[in-house]
Image 1 (cartoon, helix red, strand yellow):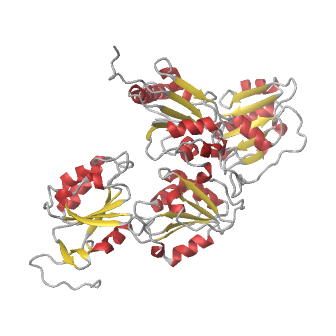
Image 2 (tube, rainbow, N blue to C red; image 1 turned 60 degrees about the vertical axis):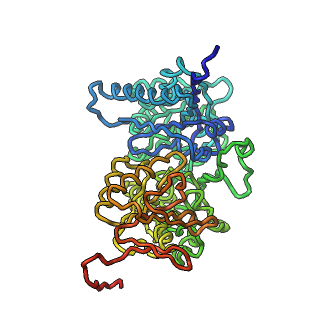
Image 3 (cartoon, helix red, strand yellow; image 1 turned 180 degrees about the horizontal axis):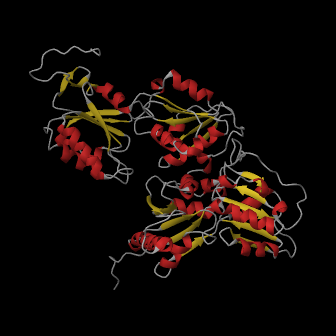
Length: 551
């Protein structure tokens, strides 16, 4: 007799994503990403994951995510075991996190740029988990293949031997191996490039070697290895020494070139026909304008307003019309009319840093980029993300402007009167970027200060308990009959606005498209022929008439 309460362990998938272009993700990889319960991915401490940005078009909004952040990459560490000790401990802890999901019956897709078993972090998880859980590897296109395709010349032919070498090898050993092979691919560049160039020179291969940076991505660049600036080599680059003499000289770029990954006439990728919930790769179009750098490149962060087309300002309309490229969350970009010749770079709503970097990179190469937000871009939206990314020295000189938009809070308030007529605060309930303890502390402080509160991001499909926790916390400072405005999809086709007492606020009626306004002690309701009106008085008992420039 079987025990039906026993959970069947989940499956671990090592998903190869290919070199960077989302359209080079295999059909099987896209299907597994869309179906997985948990998406796991690595990044350095800056938090930006190339793997996640490649996979984003195929992910579902309701999927759990495990962000595995390396404690060190190239920097020093005070770990007692040194660099290797810190890394080994990290891999053990990461394996434990994934094992907890697998033991609970959840399938885990661990993302790997390129191929999972080709200089990838996936193998460290495979060694620690494959003996306990079912594991399957989905191969991906390697950076060697992508770089060779970009170069447009064969790497090897006939009986020639291709040797793949890490740039971290000592210069003498690297030199010896380059002398002994017909063709070579040298990976793991970055800070190692001076050693690699020395080995190429000492082996007599420098004049035949080519450098490919970010193959297949929008930042792809091809140079002769001898012409590369040693101070400007990213990790995601590779040096190729082809075996056969090229039929025609490989193309060499002085700047990153535009990679045409999709077009208006391109067929839908196969994933669109698989019957999954994955997003088409077209919605993560990362094509560029092909512009060369010039002074007109800029980033303008715009706010569309919360829903209704008439709430978008003329200034924003003009910026959208003048832009060569639009960057933003798919849902928001869909609100912007399509214009011939204008490129759209749509992505998932959780990759703000990657979106910001893409926009700045496009502008650095001459594009006029509009980063699209809903509401006002400076209120829990893309303005902060773009400016934070723009602080990186590589974007120095890229102009960034922010154009305001009507906020969701003001739009909801207008539907019922003036609940924000006096001092008020805006607080996001999302704990994705800050811990709940900080959210709770701020709620308590504002509630104690007797201010109205506009609550953004109150709930999502994965985050449902915070509304109830917020209500209970506020009831420690506010009366049970304090008015609460629930505005959902205000300005949109399914708009609804209700007013309920704080004690009767039902978390089940709140989702991510809802904005809440919690009243203060001076907030009152008024029954009218137009329905309930809500206002927060600017007067406190015992205080006389107040004159104000805003009166």
